[in-house]
Image (cartoon, rainbow, N blue to C red; front, side):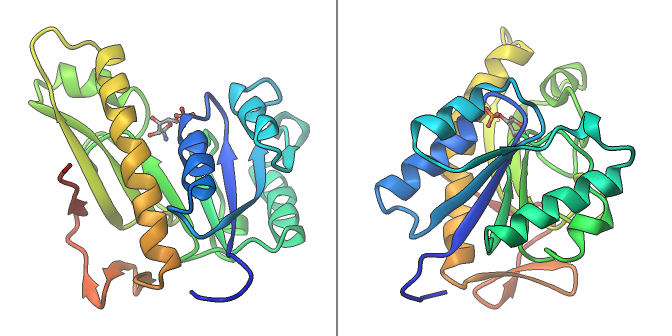
Amino acid sequence: MSSLVPPRLAILISGHGTNLQAFIDACACAELDAQIGIVISNNPDTAGLQRAENAGLATRVIDHRNFATREEFDEAMVDELYAFSIDLVVLAGFMRILTPVLVEPFAGRLLNIHPSLLPKHPGLHTHQRALDAGDCEAGATVHFVTQELDGGPPILQCRVPIVSDDTAETLAAKVSLQEHIIYPLAVRWYLQGRLQLTDNEAVLDGRTIPTTGIQYAAG
Ligand code: GRF
């Protein structure tokens, strides 16, 4: 994707916004040749909005509590994404289930990061569930978003070992650091035209990515 106008990202958040911060930093240091066109939060009181404002980014609060249905909420989101000419939608801790109203028009242009080694532990409380299951590793997965919750084709996975005194909080902290590396990397591949969603499979450089995603190795 090379053009004189940098591609425009929308970052959708609900919480702390540490992944948003990773994208702000990656765009600022030209690690990503992109522009964050809009940051949208469904939560008016999130720390992530402050991060966006500190970076001088356009923000919108679209509070899901003001909409009767998920579809109407998604319609409002789609209107904003079109209004800001968004090329790629990046879900970064966005805690709403999306409907086809948003997923279909942005199919193949919609990414998420989930804090588990998908297909293990879709849904909530992933780190506690990894501990309860006796897993020896935790991690996060960047994936394309499809209509299946946390079930779209994986792109990139990071892993951290689970040690005996880990808690859900210590695991979240360790995984979070890795998320801030792999999520911008996957977006970079997309913006370079190397990554696509084709026939419900993630494809990098013309090759289908395995169903657990590419394994990120630090260093
Ligand atoms: C991350 O753990 C991410 O995997 C999940 O939500 C969390 C967002 O954290 N989808 P932050 O708001 O980016 O700090």
